[in-house]
Image 1 (cartoon, one colour):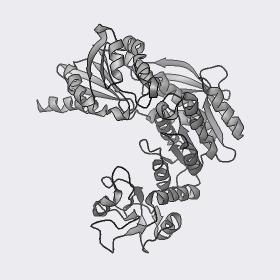
Image 2 (image 1 turned 45 degrees about the vertical axis):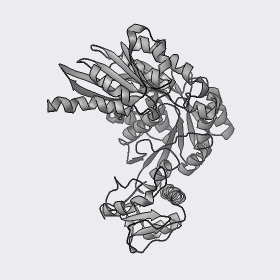
Image 3 (image 1 turned 90 degrees about the horizontal axis):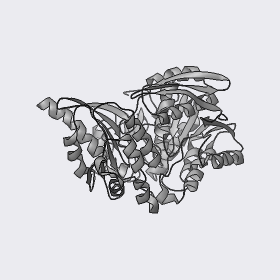
Image 4 (image 1 turned 180 degrees about the vertical axis):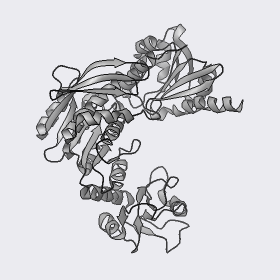
Length: 465
């Protein structure tokens, strides 16, 4: 075995309800045949493509076993297969078993904005306090949460779970699967507004995370914002203890003394009669608020907040979520602010504020469509004009809805507008000059990572030259 045994044949049978040969043991769980590590269990899920078509490849790469619900092609009859009735259902059952056998303290995070960053902050800070198992990337849906739990080492002291949604009714069952001791709700914003219909329905769905709290669990909720009262009411109705976070004097965990710069920030958090100094190597007041929520959560977990705050020094923004990438260009270097993973109106304004704090020749915003905003989408894009004008020297846009923002900008601020990110990418790359700071942001479906790759390719071009 390449690593410690995570699941042996007996535990796989009991957890999944399937059949597998004696002697099979796996050290991990994967759903991607391209990244499966030797000794891992490959789960053949069906999504855009059928995972059964990649079982042979996974086994060739060294997978210790494959979970299947039909005979996979090009696989020998004696291959190590865990045969189940339905691979997604059995992955969920495996996740439930991973959670049931764990003695760790669990915190789950949801929200419209900031949940992945808050999850990463929790993972970074808790690592200074014990062994941590956290969701990878944004594994927060009907397969991501079970996969995270199925990968949970029995020895982990803390579990950090991210829970997301696209439609109504998704969060409660995932929370019941994760059974957190603490549930955090970050900022509520009009993400998925087109699917859920109103910001209130979005808040109701996010509040469903309290449905899975363990007895005696704690809900960490925003103290401010239009939906704060709704979230508080839902927690009260569920009979769970609440801890609020924010900047208002009445917040249980309060942000004070904030000082921000182009690439870092420092502040204090007042909580329970104590103050904790925090330094983050990322900019943006919204990131500070995520840290306040995280500190409130760890105290509710029974962890020393001061020790956790020291551990936040290890937090860094992820690719697509605020990563800062220097890129060589003719005559010097430009700075890429990679926010390409997702966007809504709240996160777009927060990212523009970070761009405004940068120093250099020009501040360039490259903005793609914010999707799933429903009938209000075009107006919401146009309404970003004031923030874009205040924070950027020039604005490039792409997508049918961002055309409304392009039209609302004064002529002096307009860069190019293109039909999509593929058309815009070479225009932006060609426009960059030494000293520029360039923000790239849009919904995942807008494929703004195409623009990011075009900018990063300038580094390779410079090296070749």
